[in-house]
Structure formats: C-alpha cells, structure tokens
Length: 328
Image 1 (tube, rainbow, N blue to C red):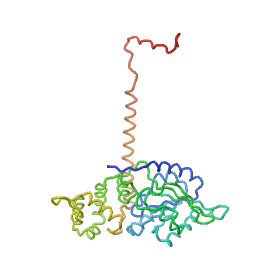
Image 2: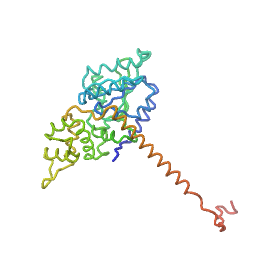
Image 3: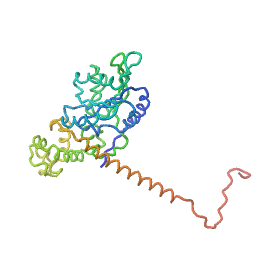
C-alpha cells in the first residue's frame, strides 16, 4: 500500500514558500541523516531550486557514519550546494551554519544587505530543535511527531541575519514506495496514514539484509538474514512478550516495538538508503508514475470519445416550450 500524507496546512505552506522565496538568499533544507534521499522533498526542490542550498543531515548520531559520508559527498558534488552533517542538539555544531550560508551567498551581509535564509524540511527531521540550538532560546515548538510547527515565523539570529522558519512539508504524491515506508518509520508521516505492521515488515526486510548483526544482537535472534520478514517480526514479538491467548503473537505490538527501537536508536546507528539505492528507487518510481499518468490520459481520452451526442435517427425533435409568452 502506498503511503500518502498531505494535510491542509501543507498546501498553505507550499504557497507561503513560493511567495517568500523571492526574497531569500540561501535555503537550508534539513534532512534526516538516516534517510537523506527520502527526506529530501522534491516539491521543495521545485520551489527553491534556483537558490543556493545548504543541506543539513541532522541526527547524524543515529545514522551509519560511513553512509553519512557517502551522502555528504553526493550532495557536495552538486552546484551551488553544500552539505553538513550534525546533531541539532549540539550548539557547537550548529555554529557552522552561518559561515556556510555566507559561503553560498558571499555578497550578502551587513545592515544594507542582510542575509535572508529560509529553513525548511519534511516533518520531524529536527528542524525546530536546530533553530532552538541556533538561538539558544525556545523559539520553535518541538515534538517527536509530524506536523508540530504550523505557521511561518521570522527569527533574528543577528542584526544582519534573518531566518524564516516554515512548517514541515511533504509532497502531494510520494512516487517512491520505499521512501514512503522510510518516512513512516522515521516519524515524518502522520500516524493515521500508514499501517504499523506493514511499515515494520518493510523495515525488517531492509535491516535483515543490510544490518542483520544489529537485529540479532538487539532481539537475541540468530540467522535473521535467512528468515522471512514475518518470521522475524513474530520472533521479536515472542522475545518481547507481545503475546495473545494460546501462544499467538501480537503482530501489531511487535510492529510497534520494531519501529520504536529504530526511532530510539536502540537498534544501533542505521541508514536506510545509499545514494545509489535511492537513485534506483527514484528511477523506478518515476517510470511507474509515468505509466500511471499515461493510463489516466488514455482513460480520459476514451471517455471523451464515448461521450458523443446521439446520432440523428430521423425522428423529428419536439420543439422546446418557450420560456416567455410570445416566443423566445
């Protein structure tokens, strides 16, 4: 099942960004270092693509260090783009942001030309935590759930440095199926938009191939790479006491355990995608979406052809009664 989540306030955010971007010098996009490709919003790229961009791979302490470096190299190879990995709760690390912005827009600075920066990202990537670390104050609400920030706000970091915060923004249609599952596993998607058991199974499918040792160590299992996803989930439930009557496994409870273990980093430092994997998923998603659009266009064209006026059968057509006395 494809995962989609686009609440009404996100449409307002899209419009606000489209209006604000005209006056912005640098865009900071905050990404989740555990899923840097899936948490990079293509809609934001469309809205802000002509502006210099600073990619922040937040939550680096939770991500696989080797894969984080791969993603940094990937983004730093792009024109007018810089990428940094950090932990938003580390004030020392966040002080690297302002110099990076000035490097991307060297002509801005001073009271005559203040730096104007838009900070954006998908929900629950730690954007508000990062802002609070930058200002050493609680300017932005934080929470371990999607959609905490609802309104744009301007924050003055210095007399010549303005930061515009925007609510978390997903995109109207997620065409990469794996991205939907990764976003759900990370907490970027509202709880009502996905089935936890399905997300947990997709997560386990990836982990048992790429991080089997972490699964085995955390849940005291053996040979997970050779097991089916459902078997692993059932084994987790059995180990953690998620049981129903007569020894049956509570798969819903087991799924919640797997997702929370991933979000809480108790499984270990994990990254759910490499640049090469995401490029392949994206190409496959774009191909499937193109096929979907072609089928939709074909159905629309067929509908127009069948909706023709009835043929003249030679019978006289009754005259329409005149709406006014004396004729039309």
